[in-house]
Length: 331
Image (tube, rainbow, N blue to C red):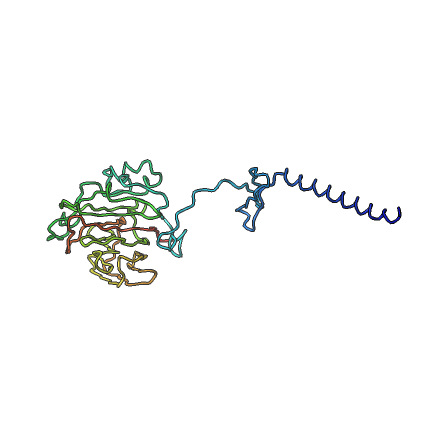
């Protein structure tokens, strides 16, 4: 009888020991503090939660660096096309901006300092980091082309006055130019902004990506170079028209079917022998007639319609610029 019971006693003891060891292992797991583990991307450690609810600690990544808390992510390109990075073949990057830091309405103010020079600045931008040293705007009270009648552009019943303080802001990854005519009538509020590091260069490549998101009649853009009787305009025209390129005094004109109300990338390549114009990566025209050989500044001018239709009281238009970049010839 004893011999029959003995094997079962052994089995019982074995099961009891197994359960005891298992319980100790569970207790050990409950009390340990795990650390983060490294995913296949060594720069992005994934943290596993602990069983007891404690906060895990991070461990160095496989490249030896210690992960830090997440940084505020850059705003993605609102146009879906990212800013080119670095130099291009034949061109050396001078300046670029994709507007990933917000600037409220009102900051582009106090701009009457060293006007039309690379030393120009807007005092209201001082709290906003690189914008203070990188951007200038035509100061409040300057008249636009329709109001001043410059270069014989007369005939408009009214024009505009530059008011960067209530027309220019940055948010959601874009620079906004919001022009308007007050509901009580009078002159339009318009804006011209200038990337300071793209001023006073002889030759270069100048690229921007933009879209008009609101286009009441009566407003236009003429992003241009204008010095010493020479003028290169692109993109230009009223927002109700398609986009064109112009030069003066060479009088070259290149028209496109591109509408302002869609995202486009325009580029000007100005060299000693020619000026080339590109729309969305495609060449639309080249001129070698009366090419300027003097330093000029890239001016993003946005203003009242000269030829009409003219803005009604309460009308407004908004141009969004996703990014800009300017380059000098590589050699």
